Amino acid sequence: MTLAHIVSPEEAGSLKPRFVDARWFLPNDERVGRTEYDRLHIPGAVFFDIDEVATPSDNHPHLAPSPKKLANWLGSVGITPDACVVIYDEAGFFSAPRVWYLLKALGHEKVHVLDGGLSAWRRVGGDVTSEVPAYEPADYPLPEKLSWPVVDREIVRHALTGQMADVVDARPAGRFNGRDPEPRPGLSSGSMPGAFNLPFSSLTGADGRFLMPDQLDMLFRDKGLDPAKPIIASCGSGISACVLLLGLAEAGWPMGTLYDGSWIDWASHPDAQIEKEGA
Image (cartoon, rainbow, N blue to C red; front, side):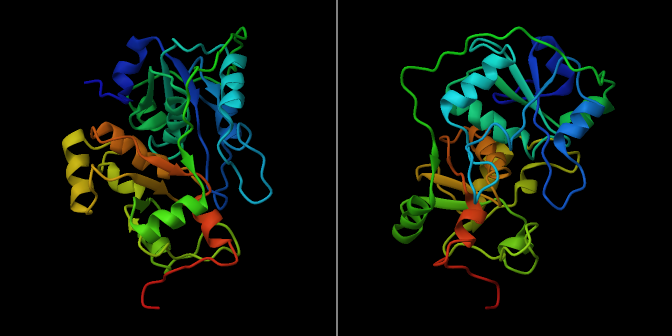
């Protein structure tokens, strides 16, 4: 069954999509996305470098690119606005939703995330290759009306202070509670006062596949979220927060907003308010 934003490995081929490899790994992981892509990827897939297709910043590793920069990248690999795009990462729901969110923000309609990622693709016998494809560049015009749904620290601070939106943090509970260290040296763990914690791994089952829409809806409601209230998603650096945004969309809730700088932006500020469990 093809869900609104997610496609299974068994169905992906029938869509005749343009595959986009969006593998990205945390700084404390020895793997590098581009290296893994060069070693093996789905035939025809192009590599989206989250750190390169970004807005340069001295303080943040991969702020969202401008719409123009994203459209230029899409055109450079021959993807047009009418193309069906399937994005994948290693396990399915870590970095791929980040690229899904950017394309949805750009107004791209036919974009899906591969359920279970490259691991699931290979388990069902999907082909892989090390051959890097070449595509003729194409034109990717920007929509006339475009709202780029990313917010900064000040908007998040006001949202938390005035309870104007629910801020949901996708980091693991140990980091959110301040018990476990952040993967980036020198950055304090802990949480924003008033934020909810919903680890991104909660949105997948034991088989690595995404929860069904009714399960996602129940998960969000059990956490105390309200579909009538704006939701801002955060994480460590704006990657896994997009898993929550994908979950909201899949559950039929209004599209949430991304705190792009996320915990790096919040915790590195000299006036940062940080809560820790038991403190």
